[in-house]
Length: 274
Length: 247
Image (tube, rainbow over all chains, first blue to last red; front, side):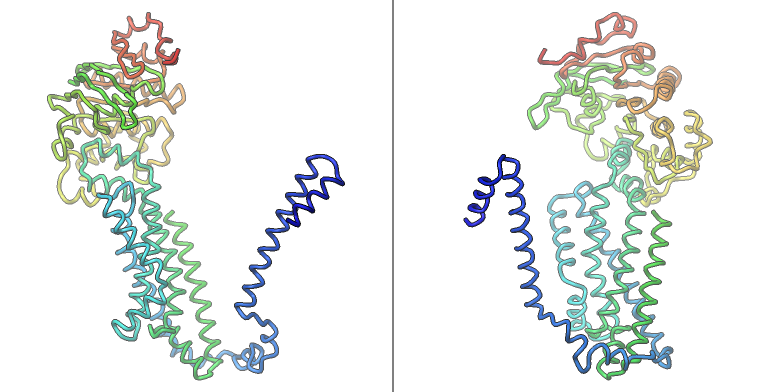
């Protein structure tokens, strides 16, 4: 109501429809900005954001940093095995995810699916695997198969099915169907058409997506240790609860090196296959 | 070799794309189909190849009624019928040679070909088909590196690897420059005259049609308007084919 009155006033003082339109637009932008600001302020309140605590708290980051340096490299050799474990959890989880995502992606791609009910079933499974985070999957598997790296592998595999299945089926759906049609017309069987036209066309993209997934899964597998799935995450949790902050900083350095090199390597490999 | 009788196609939308088409093509004959966009000429080819199912009528290819077959029998019958289209439709990431050898898939059984492998003798034979379209030097390249005209010739070599009796060509020169277009037309002409294939080619260029074809067929609104030897067709007023149906 108020804004209408305001606009009415502007249109009286200034002449012409153009300026009235400009005023309306200005009011609209102002309203939207105020609403967005309001949303952000409530988020700050709900999230209990107190930036000053970062400095004033007695055991704050400053204290933490002092106690965490220098990094304790005497534990380095002890950390080699958990590091390998972390990499291997990601590796096995990714490969298992790819192996299981592939058939689901084929069923869940509209252009190659053998039957529509299978399409919906596959898409449903893929969506479900994706909606449960890998950490939650790992937690479930810790209950199911006990502590250790294996529940981590299972958790990563399950979440990867969801992420890879969707991307794989999108790649297959975006494929050029010309070669498929051409080979069908040569009298080739469905399976022959699939292996000779579909597979060579999509294989490099799928490999690239798989490599990218490995990169992401390595980062997840670091966190999975927190729920008892072994690897560097478990070491990190232990060191934190024993207040061994110098070990924590060693672990963070290892994590940094690991993640950066995985990113570089997978990017380099992707450039080669695409 | 190819006999089409009373072939009709009505799409689910209700549009009738083809009305009771009749035509016959003998071995060694080069027939060119002319018509405006949406006249039904592509529908005709696609019905013959059973890429779409005709509403009624029969298509006989080398004594098989294509419209009645399904599954394995249809695949078998299809080997007698090769098709090339406007774009080469090659598998871009495979080599030129592998693309050509894929034409033989309909004849090759066995688990090896099901796993994406191609038999050595077919790869050997593919060199020969590439030589027929003068691409023998490019056999090792990826198909994605070929130019438009080269890709189309590679597609023709793949069609030859199929050892067909009938060759369908759906606007094979539509995306080529004039020189490459002439080359493809000469090639199709030779396949009809020398290799005794029955060639049916849908085209948009009447002048090419009159120069290369034995017979020219005109289609308008789904019906065959004329079916004449090239020399006689040339004397017709072709422009009526391209006037709007509403006019």
